[in-house]
Amino acid sequence: MNLLNPHLKFQSQKVALPYFVFAMILFVGQVLFGLIMATQYVIGDFLFPAIPFNVARMVHTNLLIVWILFGFMGAAYYLIPEESDRELYSPKLAMILFWVFAVAGVLTILGYLLVPYAGLAKMTGNELLPTMGREFLEQPTITKIGIVIVALGFLFNIGMTMLKGRKTAINVVMMTGLIGLAVLFLFSFYNPENLTRDKFYWWWVVHLWVEGVWELIMGSMLAFVLIKITGVDREVIEKWLYVIIAMALITGILGTGHHYFWIGAPGVWLWLGSIFSALEPLPFFAMVLFAFNMVNRRRRQHPNKAASYWAIGTTVTAFLGAGVWGFMHTLAPVNYYTHGTQLTAAHGHLAFYGAYAMIVMTLMSYAMPRLRGLGEAPSARAQSVELWGFWLMTSAMLLITLLLTAAGVVQVWLQRMPADGAAMSFMNTMDQLAVFFWLRLVAGVMFLVGLACYLLSFRQRAEATVQAPATA
Image 1 (tube, rainbow, N blue to C red):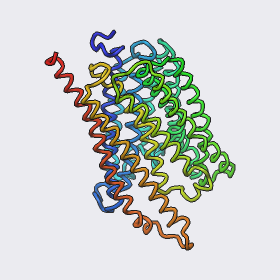
Image 2: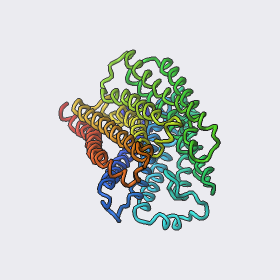
Image 3: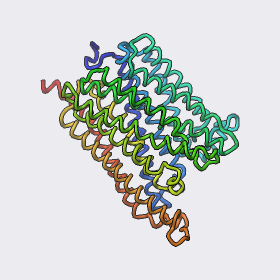
């Protein structure tokens, strides 16, 4: 029993709190820059030249990656000590790494906003080891080196915790996913001059993160929360976890081939990519069955209803975004027409939100009451506000996805396979899609309101902490 906070099993779990808080700050920034981009789609000179579209997009996608990483690290610092049944090896190291990563991330984003990208590359010595200029990996080389240092310190910290503690399927799977995340990031330093080779290995970072090792991290986080909120035997949940990660790795690794269709790779990838990427929805469908099965077999009614909604919601939304919308345009004969259209954006938005944003918020929903000393669950009022956030964000993201899907279909029809044989130009096509982009902007504002409700629910919990002694 933890005497300082009786609702935590180990005092060192509290280092997860700043990681979760900073992740949410970055999440707000990501959504705001998403709204800037959505506005620029319909009002082309909005905030120009202060924030050009290419800069807004770079900040939006980089904030996505960094806040998810902060969320994963916070989850590991909360989950690993409890699963290992011992205190974190070095809470001090965890806090040092937090500040290093946070400062490096903020400075990098400010660099994107305040310095022309070519000037930022020169300022940070990119010519010594050129790594910049690639989508999602725009970070200066010095920032990438800092990320590697933070990752090594982080893995050392949680690895030593596990080494001296209990080994479970959950912490072993999470550790495997985190090690894979760090190892695959090293390919961001490999920047060959040949464009085909560059794209070939670039996907080893981007695809094998989100459709490979990140799924292991997601699966372990989901299994941990389900054990806590359902009371189902650990052995049952661990068997499901092993099946899910096996399918995720097999389909995810070979499914990388669907990115090799049109970059100059051998034609065999048309078959390999189509077949194995068509199987990639299976682990996400298994997660849906897993979550509903565990909830139906629950041995207790956990008081944190909001966490249960997030746990089930992440599996369903991830299956829709990564599974259904991914399969929709993954076969080579279909992808020939849909590649690079708004259908890609529809899939990406729902997949990232359902699989990774929601799993971080799931674990936060479960852990934050304990981290803040409120017990197993916040007040009913706070849960009600949180559920408003859940439904608003999820409904808005589904609406964004449907609108982008409709825009993508029209884009293919007008630009890629016109009925009269004369393809419409890209800019004229975008003009025809304006109504979808206006509605997408409205849905984006709705999403921001939902995120505000989610964050407001934490404020409700803080008030409950202050008022509790007076009520007693």
